[in-house]
Amino acid sequence: MATRPNNIVAFPAEVLADQKVRQCERMVKKLLGWIEDAERFPNDRVLQIHAATAGPMLEMWSDDLKAAKIKRELLNAGDTMRHGGMIYRAQPSQNGAH
Image (cartoon, one colour):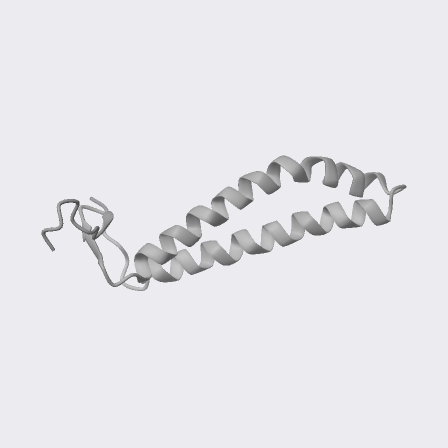
C-alpha cells in the first residue's frame, strides 16, 4: 500500500460531495445556456452543434446532479452509519420494534 506524502491532506467526503454538486449545477446551467443561445442565434453553426450535443449531456449531468445531492444528503444526515467504506442510513423498523 502506497503511503501518502506529508504535504498532501485528504479532503473530507462532505467537501468533495459539495464540489460535485456545484460542478453538476454549473454544467447543467452551461448546457441550458447553449440551448437558449442556439435559439437566439440560429445562423451560428458552432452554437447549433453545441445545442445538438447538449440534450444527451444535459440528461447525463442531471442524473449526476441527483446522485450527488443524494450522496451529500446522506453524508450530512444524523442517522447514518459508515462501515467498510459504505454509508448506511437507519430505517424505521418494519415490525414496529422501535
